[in-house]
Length: 365
Image (cartoon, rainbow, N blue to C red; front, side, top):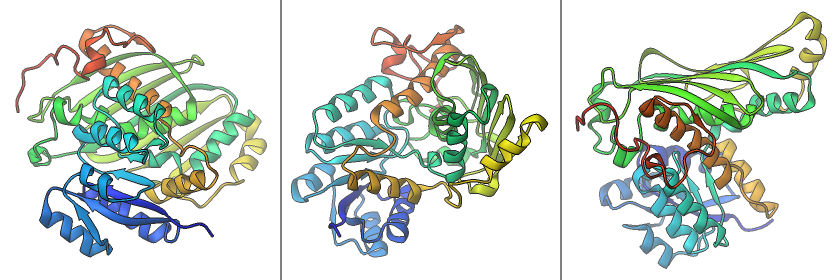
């Protein structure tokens, strides 16, 4: 048996605890948590004590100088994801990055350049790709049993009260990169694209209805996919009954996912067209089954890829496709024009910042 991959977590806030729990509970013997980084000494020591981590550092630079690592897991606020990823990749260490991978396409392309020159790989946490039911839907679509996709919806309807934004980096373009479209809906949008394939054009609106933020608190988008299907996407932080939903209407069946922050097989339903019912139901009853979405599922896939000497799943290119669609939602919402895939190049203000030349409402923070 090979030695476990040596991993350090950078940032020890709430999401880091979820990652560390997944590593401890699901990856023991395959990925070893050997160090942690946080400039907040008290928070760092509490994390080390909880997870039995021996060594701690105040900066990623100190970590990379002192430790022999296979992986760095970036659990910092979004505004420093790009710098952390580039630092790890320039040290030839693989970088696992929480969403969003960067605050802009410009930052993401800087990561991509570092990854291309590195012995390490870059991968983004997109844990909802890895549940068995999502994999089964992808397999059924590829086999043709579902027919072609006609129409879909993808909704992230969450609730975040005003005091959620008391954390200084939240609700600001410069440090979070956007509101629910960027920081919350990205999970569902990424899962959707992993199933339905590339997008071609988007028409969108974004609004700041209630929250004292610089960013939006609601957005709506109509996306045309490359295959011609149409998708409606809504992202909200103003929805008291919280839910995360994907609905896919194929020629032969409707497939639906209804969950909140993670799903199992029971969160999915399928309604076949009567003429297709036997074939669809037989495929739906097949494998894979029993694997919930979550960080543990993705870390397992990462370890499997490293064992096989391949790049971990959710590559820099995969992550860029999702980030480009989110950028296009903002660009369309703030310019009032349709945006096609590939339109946002380095000449566009939206390439550098998600709000481009500025959101159509005054700053509040």
